[in-house]
Image (cartoon, rainbow, N blue to C red):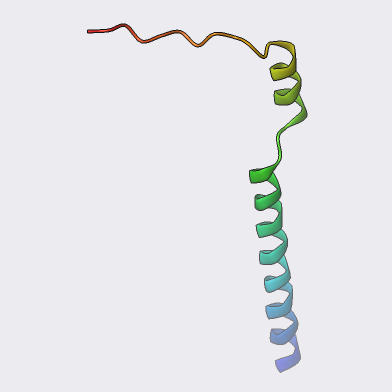
Length: 52
């Protein structure tokens, strides 16, 4: 029965590594839609805040 918990631990570890890799990939990549929007309007002005 101990082999079951060993396999369960390995599966949980693999899942954790895969999910961490997924999050890191999302963190360092840009979505195609966002990249296309920036390419279409790269010089869009940001409105200035009113001065007090």
